[in-house]
Every structure is written in C-alpha cells, then in structure tokens.
Image 1: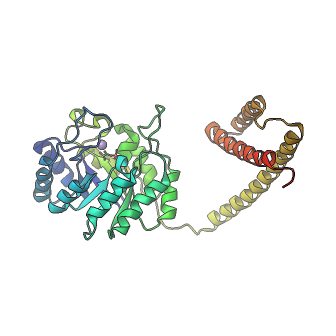
Image 2: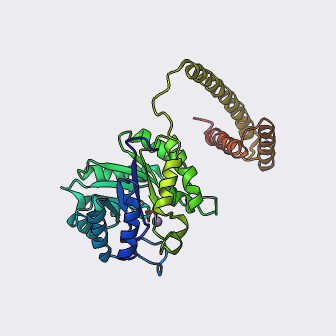
Length: 348
Ligand code: PEP
Ligand code: MN
C-alpha cells in the first residue's frame, strides 16, 4: 500500500491504436491510478523508429478519460503539442528528458504555457546535470505554472550497465534540497528498462521519500511498439504497488537514533581532521616536487596506493566501488593542491 498522498501515473509508453489505449486504460481504471499517460509524439533517438501516432492519438486519450474517468497526460516537445494538449483539456503534460536538455525547447514550451495553469512535470535531462533540470523547472515556474513536479528517469551512460539509465540517486536528492517544494516522482521504467527491475527501483524511491511513481503499463507488453521490455500489464502494476513496503515517513526523534546520529557526527568530525592531515602531507610533497622540479602525477605510485587501499577496504567489508570513488576524489584534490603549489610564482 502506498502513502495516501503518493501520485501514481501509468499507461503505455506510446499510444499505438485506439483499442490498445482503451484496453490499457480499462485495466488501469480498476487500480485507482491518478493519471493515465501515453506518448503521442515520441522523441526517438534515431530516425526510422516509431515516432508516435501523432495528433490522431489525442482523441483516443480523450475517449479513455470519458469512458473510464481517468485524468490524462502526455509528453510535449514544442508549442504545437502544448496548444493541442490545452485545446483538448489534458490534465497534465510532461517535458521529456531529450527536451529538458535544451533551454531553447524548454523556453518555447514555457512561453506557450503562459496564462494557463495545467499541471507540468519535468523529466531530468538525459545527462547528469542538476542545473539543467533545475533551470527547466524554473522556466516553467516563471511562466506562471504553479503545479510543477520533477520526474527522475535516470541518466544516459555510454557503457552497458544493469540499468537502461543510471539512476544516480544523488542528483534527485540534490534537486530536492534546491527545490524543496517541488514534488519528486520516480520513473523506474526508464531507469530500469526491464520489467523485473521496476519493483526494487520503486521500493527505493519510496524509501527515499518520493512523492509518486510513473510506471509504464500496456495491455500486451510483449507486442508494445516502443519500450516493450519495460512495460507491465495493469494487473502486474497492481501487484507491484501492493508489494511495496511503505515505511513511516515521520522524522525520527527516538533516543536510540539520536545517540547513533551523535556518533556519526563525531566520526565525521574525525574524518574531516584526518582528511585535513592528509592534505597537509600532500602539500609537503607538492613543495618537494616543486623544489626538485618533478611532475605531479606519479603514475605507478598512485595505482599502487589505490590497489592497497581497495585491498584493505575489502578486508574490513567496505564496498570496492565506494572506496575507489572516494580515493579518486581525494587524489583529485591532492592534485589540485599540488598544482596550486607548483604554479605559484616565487615572487608571489
Ligand atoms: C517516455 O516517458 O516514454 C519517455 C520518452 O521518457 P524519457 O523522456 O524519460 O526518455
Ligand atoms: Mn517509454
């Protein structure tokens, strides 16, 4: 069971046929979702793929709304889309990841929204750039829209990974810190790219206090024209939502936790002191390198040190990935400090 104020948005990746839209909407109408979604204009990465059914699909969504009492939502990417969505009284629109990335596009959408008050959701840009995401939301707010939400759909990476799009959870966490009043929705479908990943991703979003979920569903997922691997049937959606464990969202102020937090704070203070000491040693090494006219990066020594740290970390049960990232960051800052020392003019 979901928390009472969570928003659930579901529906097919694309509107394909009238029958497919109505059949999916019928299935979803029994679940009690908040919005029925379907892409009418599909921004595809490469030409030649199905690019959406176009304007014809509008009437199918309107019919789904009339028949099943669902609120409807679709993706817009330019003025013409916004105008059609407004003319047909869509309840909500969203800006897709490939549009958020482009301030010209977002500005065009924002301008065509002026004077209206439709609900707008802004997906994160395809690249892991918090500022572009915040900027797009700000453009929509500046246009006078008051009901704006953010959708976290993950970020493109070149390498093949478990996920279709890297979740990079820190970025939505940072977004929420910057825009605390903007509801945050998770789209596990485009993060996971495969149906079996939806539940763990949706669970994580709930545990991170998200305000809702957008999950793609289709009456016949196997034969979906777009994103077939990540769509589930309305019935599967129902069971997914029922499987979510919803935990208490109140701020914790019990003694046990307060004591543990105090220990964390003290440990963090020690970490800062340790890092400070480490950087002082780096500074000394920097002075030596400058004196003897040595380059900063001692390649073998850095690789050896990283290996040694990873082995030690593994012995005490720390994650290899975490420790590697941490020491890369520390090393980067050592380099920054030493570069400053090396570039300092004697007479400065
Ligand atoms: C979609 O929601 O179907 C879609 C195209 O998403 P995104 O913009 O996240 O790729
Ligand atoms: Mn999709």
